[in-house]
Image (cartoon, rainbow, N blue to C red; front, side, top):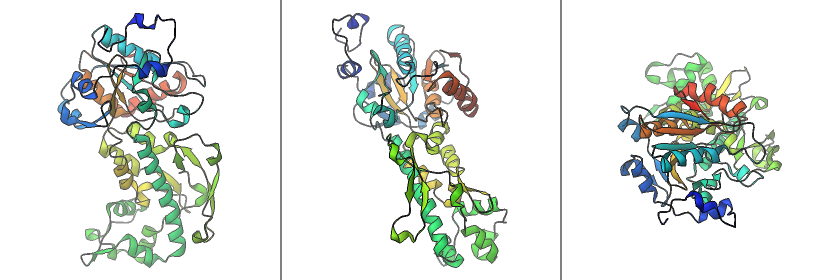
Length: 399
């Protein structure tokens, strides 16, 4: 009818349009208009073109006294390889409630991995006249969150191999000099090393001065002694590439024979992605990233990313990824797209952050419809048993 809103009669044509044709023929609203319609202020947006924007977590502080909206979770039976239509239903319900019944509604879904997108399943924007748009941008790269997770994950993998190499080729004194450098005429310890002392049961010296440590204490501090057979952290890549399921690293002559077998995971299977989805804010994400166990040492003690000293760098790489991305449906209702952990190896739900923001924006009379990925026997179970327990939120109704 000239306003860009799709009507029921639009589907009654001789030619049944494909999902792509429908998405590409849609008249999109600028994302600034979508944001304004749901109460997001201009300074709370970080624009990614005309039709996508990151939403800053500051909005939670502004709306902290506002009551939450109603919380609805969509689930389904165990999906087929082609999917089972949960996103289509999620978007359809949202459009019906807001565009046709006038209720204030937010739709919250996961960002799709490029693996399924380029596989038999295809994209994850919904289908028919119940889609998130721009569909191509939704399914490909979006605002780069999965790439940030990939970078953070591969940084850890590189740091593990580099640390094992240096520990095998250098003395305690050299390692100590590198990890506790002299600054301003005094040796210093970064906070992660101070925390490592605590995990080792070694008293933190006065003024955190590493020079006061005994030789054996220095040895324990600077040597992780990772057992290669116990490494559980893999590199990742957001593509279905079966020939990376088992690889050998360290074959260059410069690695001096330190060869080991490992593999690639798909990026959304990384623990960093699960952390992103379960974090409640930036500080919580940083803490969770630091607690990730990547291996055991020769004494069977856990080795964490904080022990390696890369957790802070992981958080920096993912600092923009913690902000949910605002998009729109074909009928111009707001959508938060955020995080994409697989349900079979993680918990399969969009982020706690996106749900918290949406519930505040929706307000007491509004509704947030979030999708539990995969089926009721995995995604829904983990929504209730993992996501809700961490977030403290409780759904008002399942669909």
